[in-house]
Length: 393
Image (cartoon, one colour):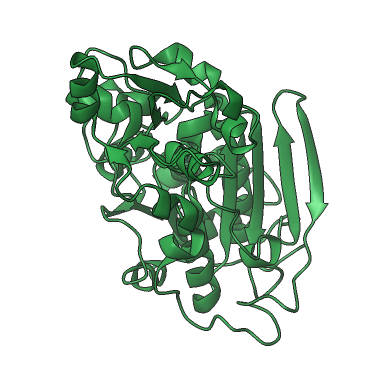
């Protein structure tokens, strides 16, 4: 879909800007006028992680005049495999500040605004109102729906991207000209059905593939050139090296942007709307949770326990709690592995952080294993509290 330019052009380009952006200026579809629009643009990137890293770097290099960064996290060593805007010296530093420093190295002509905070219903409208375009680099459903709802309510377009293992998706959502995210995904998936990148992994370079598509779409919207991804979903398979486009129509029954909307303001609690864990899992863990210290004490005392690791085999190869047996969550939830579980020993389930083991515990409780428990905080908690020499991931 061809759309008019999102922003008005700046008054002029300086001599330094002409030198810097000369390869843009000689493209007929961009030219001086398009570069002036980029200079006058205000773009907010939600997240300075996997997608935010290449997006911010290329937006800065392209000469977007004002770049906003909203991120409350700090740089971790495990981020460096894909979050290329950060370096070894940035570990422990706020991501927004680290990203800002990198942007200044790439292009000192860009103004950077840091929002070192968690995006929530209380601040999202105020932050979004300062920008022309939003680039969504989030990695969880609660924030995705929050970004979408705020953008629709404020009449802002935003460029969306999603990554997992070798697969990526990208689109542009702008309710005034096409569908919103809720038109594509009216409801979030059931808790635990879609693993996060922290659980399932992501190919580092996939972030650059999808992040660069997001920047490409942002530039087209700002300058008013080309065919936008509004109304289309780009799906990328890095293993097959294939791109395909799926048409996405505006849903007349959409709860947010449809003909008779039922969502007219931000939800009170997006975490509750998306459900980090199911109701069954929340109920199952009540009085059925042990800490890493308690589990270690049980082991030292020689208590008869059957320690079950419900992660995936690749995770089990990275790090494991001594004495654990691998039985992936899917095999427990499906019932295929129930015959492997003893009736005469205390069953203790664990995963990486406690979410998957809570879901598996609910399945065991439903199958009659009333005394089963799960490890609060999973392997990460064991590493922090019991054995810091083990690698975290």
